[in-house]
Amino acid sequence: MPFVKLVKNKAYFKRFQVQYRRRREGKTDFRARRQMVLQDKTKYGAPKYRLVVRFTNKDIIAQIVHAEVVGDKVLQAAYAHELPLFGLNHGLTNYAAAYATGLLLAR
Image 1 (cartoon, rainbow, N blue to C red):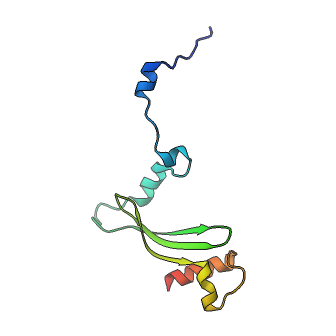
Image 2 (image 1 turned 135 degrees about the horizontal axis):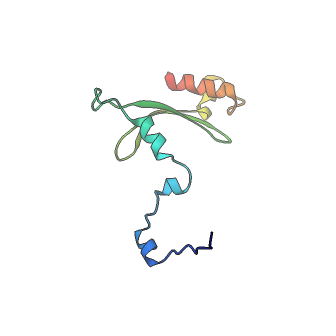
């Protein structure tokens, strides 16, 4: 098999389409996201809610979110730094705090 040089010339770059920023950063898989937020056609106009939990180094964030065309809307949110008001003062990033934050969100 002879050596063939791969040519990327002006015609190649004129037709090159840049990917979405979040796809380039590797943060969002848009095919999986589309399947996740897709609502059944018989439930026209009804939002599909989902629970989003984010762990940071110092906090736990729990949110109830639904997707819209212009972006996701957060309906309700609870944070682990709110737990000291309910008597849980230490270990705000462990498994038990995550459970308590979920209970706080459901409240």
